[in-house]
Length: 142
Ligand code: CMP
Image (tube, rainbow, N blue to C red; front, top):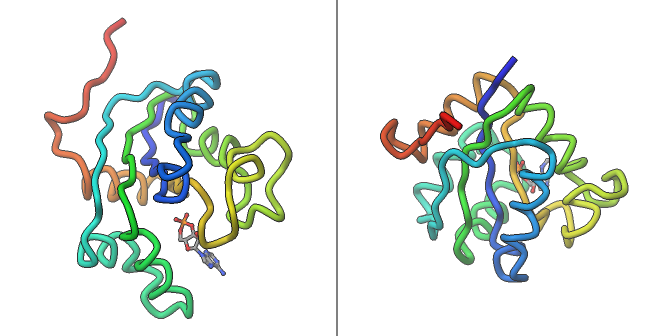
């Protein structure tokens, strides 16, 4: 079915001037960018986004990294968008990511791993609403 998923181009990939190449991968796979903006996350915004990881040992490093520079946040729409985007991204750890995936091609490490994507319908809905008002999302009519 047609789904929406939430995606981030992380600070490492923005710094490496990879926004366009990453967007091209989404579009080539048939995912439509129906909302997009550049933001520099505050500590509070990043902590709230990653609240589920608060007890994990990597939480402080994660928040420091995600606030280290601007990111692109976007909503992707398409057939099975959540799984499709996870396939395009590859495994969280670039050392384990399949060839030709964004993480294999562009990530530095498990911490600086180029992109984020929602892992389930519930998290997609929550993450989209965390960054976008309804009137910032532009479903395609053609
Ligand atoms: P992301 O999809 O943005 O969600 C949480 C992030 O934490 C993850 O991508 C990784 O970049 C980072 N991270 C660092 N260490 C780990 C780990 N051991 N397991 C999962 N995520 C990790």
